[in-house]
Image (cartoon, one colour):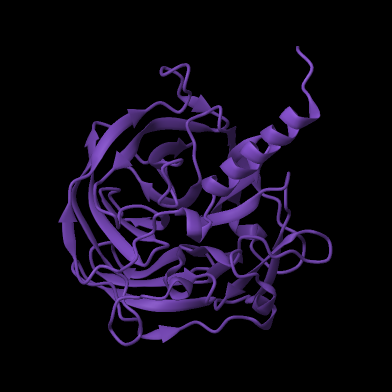
Length: 348
């Protein structure tokens, strides 16, 4: 180990800070599209297969999950990227994803047996505002969470949460059109404490049991006086404020309802000194109630030694063999320093 001068240390700090700024979304430094799409367009997506362990492609067991495969995905369209919310149909073959730049993507997921191999039939389109025109303001485009209310990923109704201009809107959609919204979900008074860029990241609906139909909405980082993360149960038999134990400085980025009535949470931690980390936590249906802070069960925690990026979206479906499949996706922030990844795991 050689000694480092103060000048060199200061220079290194500047480089690390600059890299961190580039890594996460500073609007002045990323190439988000200046204008929204006018309507749906087809595009081609290229893929590079990924192992989760960069050094051992044969390894499949990570935490309590089994890795099924993943892809680094690319497209030439300037509107491709920024994916912060997603849903899959019951078969796990049709993907609907929302970008925080005000667009949607629908694609067919292609498989070789159980392994994800590509995306085909890819269409991009604009998320429409209340007047039926594409969202144009950056403060209104920032879609971060999505939960299907009815139908599937080809046609139905979804709830979409936005940050900056904080709101939850109900969006009818078809294969060619997403919106305009036909209503809004009122936010609790405590939602006024959300900061502009740490708003409603996690949105899900409970799929079974006595809480079926309850909406779960959790900001990225809204803490109570004890440092726990605050969120809300909206509708259902027991609406109210919930608290989730903040473990290890992680923030919430997405949520998905499990077939049996529980909940999955996708979490992220970023520090200049250590890079980015991800975690997936399972919350039992019986724990989803106001009162005692919710802890749950950690299924997977990984640093960027593994093949991860800025993981911001999660969806769940049941495979033909009965396995519960978790699909996670990253938000590249339209930055050359980041990647759009899509990966799948099975849950025992």
